Image (cartoon, rainbow, N blue to C red; front, top):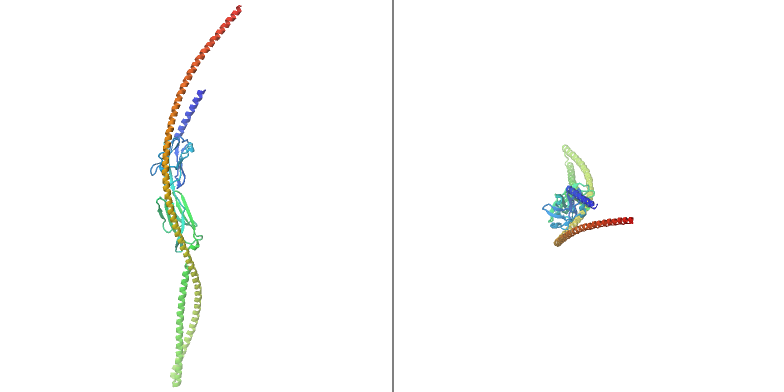
Length: 490
């Protein structure tokens, strides 16, 4: 019965191993169809798994970065993580999900991603001689900053700036309805020593219903977008000078009209004066002629001629009087026009006062803009100071990180040596254990043989005793029969 159970167990074990080998041999290494996108500083997972799912606990899994050159990223060997020959930039940043290996999950976790980590990674199962690749895209983003950069015409110039981007982004301006605004030229681009892009773009905006404008920075490759909105107060926009121009034009027109009226009146007055002098002169001449007639007693022909002259002079006087009345009427009309001009002048004076007030407001706004420019310059200086301090701090941190990295590498190297030493000691213990097991197996075999021999001897002795027992019993039976026969005789 025991032999049957042992045989059945061996058969089941062989069957299980055969099924496992068949299943493992048919599994494929599967990765993601799309690239994995990450931002600098993120912790990401590079997916890789076996389909159909089989345990990868006893397999050899190797992660390698293929471009621009092959770099060993992570190795799973002898049922544990191995960091031998790992590329230095990945030290302390890679790990696998050991509790998921039994389900065929051999994905790699990469922490604190940097721009230099971008590339194509290979997930290679050495046990199966199968692999897949994963594409990693790494980007960097930042929030855009909007500032007022002065005025232009009737509008305000806005500046949008955003640094620390990778890959190179696109920048555009929008109004409150989402319509793209025409910018003041193409965007300005700059790339620093770390490979990050800074983008800057200006736009001139006019006053709208809500004076809200948005700067949008977009990176399509990593599918990231950042926006910043600004509200420009009405006071910042330049005041319209249309009223001033109209007022000046009206003032010029009034001056021209007044000058024309003055010249016309002066000419009319001159003509009127001239006519008055002529009338006075003709009256004097008429008087002199009458006196001369009376003195000389001129003949009738002379009197008739003189009378005709007087009649002509009278008609001329009447015409001059009529012209005088026309001039008087024209004078009254010009006086009315002058009154209208005076009223228009008063209205223009009011417009001029309004223009003066607008001018004062413009001067006040100019002062505010100058103050804003000074504040902006102060902020720029403070920003440059902060950037310099940040760069110095980053440089110091870089030095400290490099020092820590060297210490870490040295510590890892020491740990690797100690682990290698422990591994050798472990191998030695395993060999001694195997030898001890082998010795024990020999001794057990010897004891088993001795036991079998002892059992065989005991079996022989028992057989011998059984034969002797049977012999004794037969002898006793024989003696009993003889005693019975003897008793019958007696």
